[in-house]
Image (cartoon, rainbow, N blue to C red; front, side):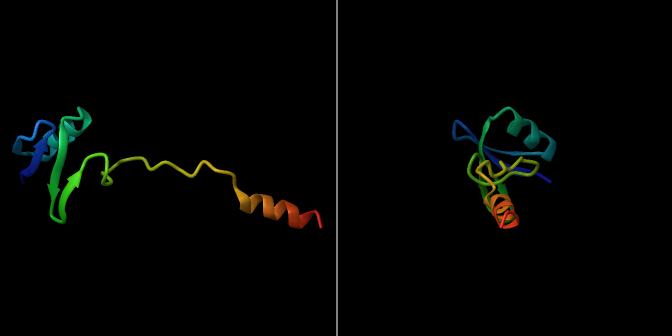
Length: 70
């Protein structure tokens, strides 16, 4: 199966999945095509991509501590 890709310079190509992985690692692509449509690199989620966790304060923990002190 070949996957359609668009390089950063605007050129289009068809590549095998293992080449797609390499091009993504090397940040050489602007987008690639899935069955559902084009995936924009840096905008749409990618397979294996780590999602940043919430880094704010945990208000639920504070609420539990406050209630237990009453």
